Image (cartoon, rainbow, N blue to C red; front, side, top):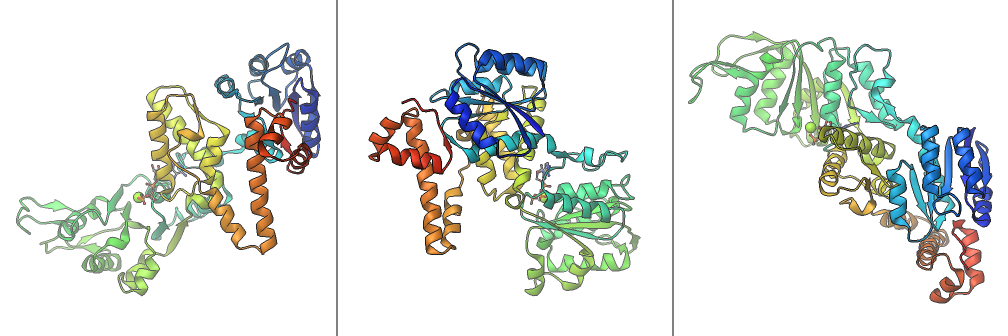
Length: 457
Ligand SMILES: Nc1ncnc2c1ncn2[C@@H]1O[C@H](COP(=O)(O)OP(=O)(O)OP(=O)(O)O)[C@@H](O)[C@H]1O
Ligand SMILES: [Mg+2]
């Protein structure tokens, strides 16, 4: 049972919150319309969540917030603010409020906010998942989604073996991070991990990088130089962007895998090599095999184990924990106070499809921290835009005509009404007049969609 205290000196508001929240069997509600009583309660009794109005007659919501967190720092506080009090709300977040809801809001928005407040405790940091292990091989890998947990389960299972692994996934999904995690969990964790990008160098240079060369092997080869494969001996060799490997290098790599021996460019002697190959590709390698661009025999040698990393848009639950992780990491590095996201900023990040995945998220966070100095990061600060409306419309396109129309209409009515109620500070008469509909219709819609607003008629 979650203990929730609601403080609002407007009885009507209190009643509607009571009506909505009392449906939830896992909530134990305490309500008061008296800010003095509320203020005493927050200092004497521990609540999991406090929902308080910002502006109240005797004691302000900010004071209640401060007193609550002074006595029970783990409590979460959600502030409800009236119309046009954004600045006060930002101040509340600065003082430690979990979030603020600006009136009017829908019951869905309220539930989302409450659920997030409780969810925050449940983020899996990789260290705690593996707390009984001496090392922390998953350090720096943040996740919350079940789909990514399954990926890490596979990683844990295959890492101790010596089989070659291929990691596929769109750009920026964490392929290198996972490759390093596999190495750290393997028998050869104390031997080298050598990463190489197959797309980065022209073929001739790449060959001598990989296999090394003897003195005089080609113009400019003034000294004998061992290749990276020799450096990686007994350890892990990470071949990034394996799909870029040219046909002749594919042959050479295959030979090495079969014979476990290499020969330096221009060299006679064979050198024994024992490495585990982890490769990564953001191309559809199977298709490349079908198109005869990548050797099938090499593909099978490399892909004994296949790990596919899902794109960030398919693991929406990971977005906010990873974003917070980057904010914390970057702020600590700069030695500035850790910033927080507003509710709307979090929503926007969850709706955005992140084509560049985690790397794009990392870049976006870096840019905001650099460009915006506010303590709270708002949706308007994010250099991304959501195509939620499009995706909702797309969803409607695949429904039957009536359901589709109802769905689009419902979204329109909610957006339209919340916009005008906000514009007219919750005054139904003014809203009705401005919109050219009668008051009863507004009352009916407000009720139908559970729009929570402050009636200032
Ligand atoms: N689950 C995660 N938690 C925290 N940071 C992550 C996570 N996944 C990836 N990152 C970080 O995101 C960045 C991109 O990850 P990485 O380089 O491993 O991706 P990649 O798939 O190899 O990308 P590319 O295709 O661009 O080479 C890195 O800075 C990495 O540390
Ligand atoms: Mg990479």
